Image (cartoon, rainbow, N blue to C red; front, side, top):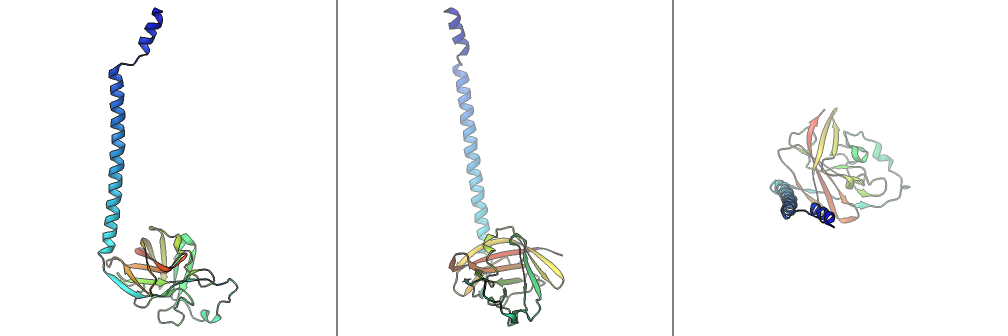
Length: 217
């Protein structure tokens, strides 16, 4: 009996040890709560600053007529759409997209025939300019921008023009009501590419992708 009592005494943890363990657990828990709080506030601050950057920049209004088209794969592509040469190409590696575009004054420069350079935009070689390209989403041969919805901030787009490759990265994506016009929010101190198409599964809105030039090759 005496031996058992001695063993029980050896196994018993002192109140001071329990208090120390408890204090450590509370401190550790407080640290993680504080870390999560700081991280959350940091993300909120980043989002706020990002919104301010685009809300405080000037915006231009352009006439754009995009929609989600639904056609059959059997619909024949009009042959007259091939009679002119492209002046450049738009390539988006992430969605395996590559398509030529016509001169802005061409009769074929329309979303009904191809991707369209919007009137009032600039070609890639204009410093701090904005090349604006619109296209249909949906199904069928003329839904050239049907996979743009897969793009995210940071994805790359490449415009080949006059023998040079202009490489852009997407910096902002936002939606607007599909009213026939679109306001473009961008940094006027950067050379920009803007892509516009009808929002996937929502013909009442259009999605705008803002990309900024980061290198020329």
